[in-house]
Structure formats: C-alpha cells, structure tokens
Image (cartoon, rainbow, N blue to C red; front, side, top):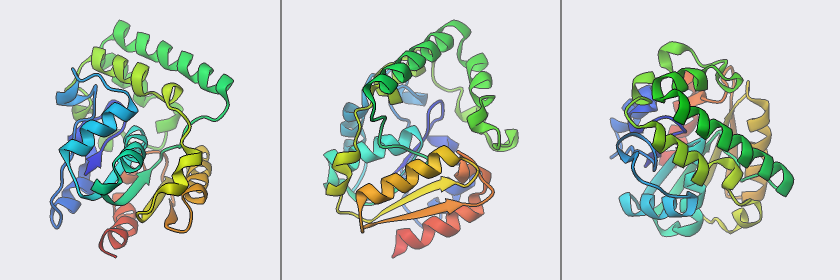
Length: 234
C-alpha cells in the first residue's frame, strides 16, 4: 500500500512506485480529498478506516501526509499492517498553542487554494522552502492536478497537522517492524524521524537519505529503494 503526500495522488510515486510494482502487488491509493478521491471528506482516523478497507494485509508505505495516515492505520487497524515505512512524517504537535497556530495556518492555506484554484495553488505549494531541493522534473505535477481545490481545502481542514492529535504516547504499542525515513537536507523532519523511532521502540529503525530533502523518495529514488527494499523482504 502506497499512500502519497498532500496535493499528490496515487500516480505520484515515480520510479519508486514503478520499481516496487515489478516484484510486489502494489496498491497506490488516492487519499481522501485527492485525485479520484477528491470528493471524499475524512479526518485522519476516518481516512485510516477507509484505507484499511482498501488494502492489506501487507506492507504500508506513506510519505508526509500519507505517513501520518499510515501511522493512524497501524494504530487503528494493526491487523492489515505487516510492515510500515514512514517517510518525512510526524507524530503530531504536542503543544496546544502551537497546534492551534498550525490549525490557523492550515486554514489560511485552505482559503488560498479555494481562492487561487488548483493549478496556481500547486505552483505556489511546490515553491515553498520545504521543496527547495525537489527538482521540477520529478515533482510529478501532472499527478497533482487531477483532483480539486475543494478536495485539498477539506483535506487541510480535516487532516492537516493542526487537526492531528499527538500520537507520540501511543506509538510504543505498535508491534510490526517500522522503518522511519527522512532526507538529510530536511533537518526538522530528521528530528521528527528520530523521535518517531525512539517512541516506537526496538521494532523501529531509522534511515536518513543523504543529499535529499523532504521528498527524499523522489529526489534520490535509487538510494531510497536501496534502503527500503531490504526492509520489505526481511
């Protein structure tokens, strides 16, 4: 099961999805509010329920927003998650004040996409500092334009980081093997990855992809696959 990040769709996995599809049965979903699921309205727990119905048991791989969704699937439906790969994700914002501030920022971004429309918003989104190391030719823009502005706005309001309850205290209950991945050029998410691995405990391992940022699987797909493949077949 491959679960993409915000603004993307199931076709956005690029060489990683192609390579995994050569020797795995791959289901690359369109998450709630995205792509062909742009009319689906779901928060993270509801999204986890929907995703669990769509696939598994098997290995789950989630990037950014998709990583947060996969953590919710693993907690709510561990029977469908045999192995978990979480890429550039977080267990949530601890401080209520910081979480409220992020919720307000998510609302501002939701209003922007409603105001500007999908194509202009995606250009703005990919211009943010978070994606400074992501080359335009691998950004898979075509797989970000198949949904709707309304779908992305609802995704932010329902499943954005500002509306995510912190999961840190629950992560130690995960019993499946977990691989936590981040790009070395994305220090905030390296720190979050380190914390995720600590909180999950001895069944978690950490991998940092050198020379890559937030979208490390798109920026350095070969290095990413060299890290993930052994974990999937161990």
